Length: 302
Ligand SMILES: Nc1nc2c(c(=O)[nH]1)N[C@H]1C(S)=C(S)[C@@H](COP(=O)(O)O)O[C@H]1N2
Ligand SMILES: [Mo]
Image (cartoon, helix red, strand yellow):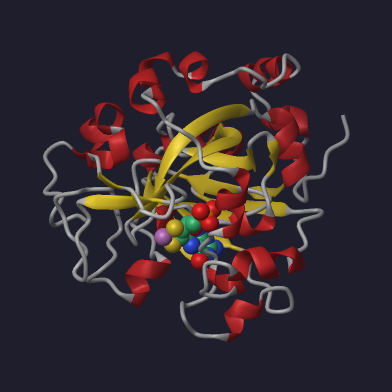
């Protein structure tokens, strides 16, 4: 089988039989495969009347500062990003470090559709029908070593294609991080599509992180590097303002942002009289993820 590694491993060396078998399931198609089918234990939080936002809303109201800080800048400018031939460097504490071709990764992954609540730290929210695969499956390809405790992510840095990086609004490239157990959690996904279509550039093509129980800024876009580490990695928003943005960034209605309450959210697209709803602990995924933070003071580790 042809492969595009830049190291000397072959695809067969890194493909566990399970991944191969799962790949075959894609042939059955993703149509009709809802979260309830894919993740029986998680059906409750994610299927109680989640009305998805429209394609228009999801793809024209964005945060992607590499293309400008306005909500409509990404939709206007992100077409400049070239996603053909995309490669992801996976390095650090892994058995099979190397350059992974996005197309090859996609051919190995089980693509699922998952409708998740999406809550920005600015107190607005959407419901987005993502397509993608579990981050764990990608990390398993690379083989996470026992000493790894965190996962660091990095966005592409392309001054020629990203007009926003000319401005020092953040320390480029955009970086993010998760604790390893958060990264391995079955709710954590790499999104590659929305509404069954290829993910648009403004939403983070060709692949972006989605961690549904965390504020939106953890969902790093257009990922080019994933590094397994033994210490907590830096994150862009924490570096720019550590008092307002912590490493964990779990959605928590009880912990206010220093400049505004996090207790309610405005649902994008709910009409002229913008609907505000109470924000749920862990964005509604409390049953699934609260155990990850047992014994932690969430006001201190915000
Ligand atoms: N590389 C990069 N990733 C990013 C951002 C960014 O500016 N650059 N913004 C974050 C923030 S603050 C949010 S709310 C989400 C927005 O995702 P969406 O535009 O797909 O809704 O992307 C996150 N990922
Ligand atoms: Mo955000």
